Image (cartoon, rainbow, N blue to C red):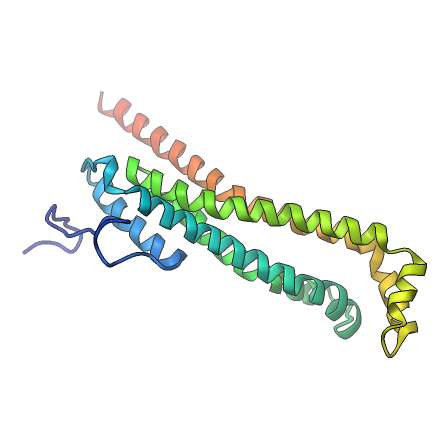
Length: 232
């Protein structure tokens, strides 16, 4: 009877972008597909580079882009609400822990998907897994870097346009112009620093999976070299 960890070369694996009907839909299904490649390559099986077709690489690239877009959109929509409305006015508290937890809410999808991408780094072992992982990371990283740059530029422009006269002219369009005027001037000094922190965080989320994969790969090669020296 075969053990549960035994691998059969007859296992059916559907190539990404091939004629099969299966195609990964999101980052979780993409990771599952990469895990299947890892099972083969970690057993020393040589997979032809054509196994991951051009269409398959593009599918992974698009999944990465879609993941980065959704993460960035979540931040763009919720970051101003939490940082410039809920924290200073609705949830005004001196407790740093409570502030930290509330501040993290817009970043939750970014943090979760970054952890998943770092986790994939352990599968960075062979030609196919490397190609698949790189396609996924490049798509996600490009979008995150672009959105981080746009957030920084947009908030810089808003800060430069926020003269007292202009802020008062906009505040008068609301029911409580004095309160909005004073509140906006209070958060104005924090506008650029918070936007900078967000842009840096998105850049780190885009780059950290590469760094983790590279570090794990180097560690794996180092251990293999040490094991060979012990054998010799």
